[in-house]
Amino acid sequence: AAPPGAGAAPPPATGTSASGRPSRPGATPAGGSAPAAAGPPRPGRRGVPRDALALLGVVPFLAFTVIFLLLPVGNVAVDAFRDGDGNWTLHNIRLSFEGIYRDAFVTSLKVALLTAAIGVVFGTLLAQAVLTTKRNTLLRRVITTASGVFANFGGVPLAFAFIATLGATGLVTRWLDAVGLPLESAGFSLFTFSGIVVVYIYFQVPLMVLVITPALEGLRPQWREAAEGLGASTWAYWRHVGLPVLAPSLLGSYLLLFGSSFAAYATAWALTSGTVPLVPIKIGSLLSGNVITGGENLGKALGFEMILVIAVVVVGYLLLSRRAARGLG
Image (cartoon, rainbow, N blue to C red; front, side, top):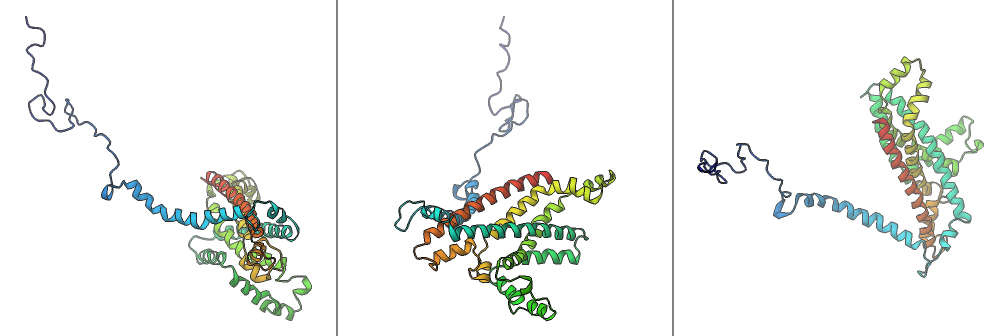
């Protein structure tokens, strides 16, 4: 007797079905199609992978960052610890915390802390007042557009605008003198610490409006409705719901305004000509040789310390922004 299966037909060869018809490439014996194997990334033109072509768009940005940010920062950091002969020293760092340079740091910190706080308070109130109006109203569009313009209007033009308005012979100054309210009797002068604070507030408040508006829009109406349903007043809602949710955004905005005020140079220089000690003005004087000759490395030491302060501000702002995004998400 023949063994079992001896008279059976052999299995079809590859490419041939059991009925003798040629099978399609990739077909399974049951007639189904097998999934195609994943091949290598499709090349772009001339055999270059598409991912490599996409990275070419980042090259200009990376080159710009290296040339205009990393290299100057590295040069400032290195020269801050060198003397005029190229020898390593800590003399520049020690000198930057003494005398007029220490006073410049203290004044710069006072201006930045005060103007940032005023900008956060009034900017938040203005933004909330704008958001209470109907969407796409003329008032809302005007304030939003004006905030974008005023926040970017600074430097020498801003200083001259305030000199023409609140200077010794400014329009507002002469008008107040005519009505018997002279600014000098109140102890205000545009060319002192208080004058710099007033000028900086001009662009700090609009900047705060632009920064805090998205966070205020993220407050859900259901939260306020739920609080009012439980008998909460407007103050109770903001104290227990609104402000805790907005706290990371408010702190991050404060850091942003602090950095903007701390690093401002052109406006303060055009306004006071260096009579008010500020770190950016001292750096400019040292690099131009108006104070002492050979003080470039001391100026770079002051610049390096400013970079450290701004770096801390940026890191704090990024961390708070991430936390604010989670809270409002």
